[in-house]
Amino acid sequence: MTLSILLLLTVSVSIFQYLYKYEAKGELDDGTSSESRVKDFGAWIPSESYLERMHGDKQVNAINSILSQGFNEYYFVMRNFNNTTETNSTEALLKLADTTNLKIIIILLPLAEGGTHVSYDWKGWMMYFNSLKEKHSSFLGFAIDDFNAVVDIRRIYLMNNMDLMGLSYFSSALSYKKDDVQFFPVMYLETSGFETLKKEYNKYIESVILVSTLYQNVSYLENNFANISKMLDNKPIKFIVYPNTGKFYLSSDRLITGTLSIASRWVDGIIIFRNINHPVVQNYLHNHNDPQYMNAIGEIEKLQLKYEIIESRRDIGMCTFCLYEKTEIALINMPK
Image (cartoon, rainbow, N blue to C red; front, side, top):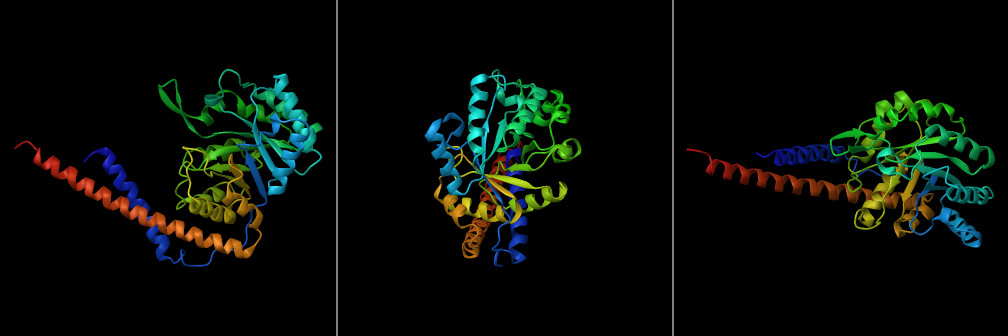
């Protein structure tokens, strides 16, 4: 038996067992909550609305458009606070946003992702953020992308980004941050590091942004939300949702709707990754306070979960067939 077949069989059986219990409890047939706890809606580097790159009336109209859709947070990347062009565009955006209800969150890239044009003077960043907070009511804080991602270091060994951040003295630099400058680490649900996050960063964190690498499977989502929320002592959490954004993020409307339905019960903020104009997203933004709509997407969530049950059973069947076939071949080729 090859390792890959054994791994596939183990994972498939685990999925089946979990979903079988979920189905047997009757949770797929019960009514889901018609209330959403979500208060914040964020646009993460929107595909067609790079507010920080706009000027004049175009920027004003773009901000008004985002607000009219229901978003109240805007996330964009900064690379170097010593770059005058970059800081001027940020200041202009914040100055305009000060006259609206839009809150701005700056995304910083981790060491493994940034490259040579990114500043990793963490103390310098904290002082810069403090100055922005003093001048602009629209500046909410900053996020560190892929905070607990596992990265390949010079093709030699794997390392968690959190370890790299520690080696670069990020933790100590946070002590220079003012309390009203909010810090949002972006944490992958499937990657370790949550214990370290709570131990080393809890006092600096206002809210945690969660993201899933298994965005095409919602079966574990609610359980993960519950466990992480408990681990973090019910600290506010936000969740990044991936609509269709190209070949790397292909999601069905049912999957997106099911994801939004589950997230509505567990998170305090939903962040839409790039494709903020997706019809399912727009429908949710305009109707999430409607109990009838929430009940309707709850039914679609059940359909998605049932679909994943069927797929997991199919995978188990295919895996069992492959295992049988491989075993037969091994027996035939076994030395006499």
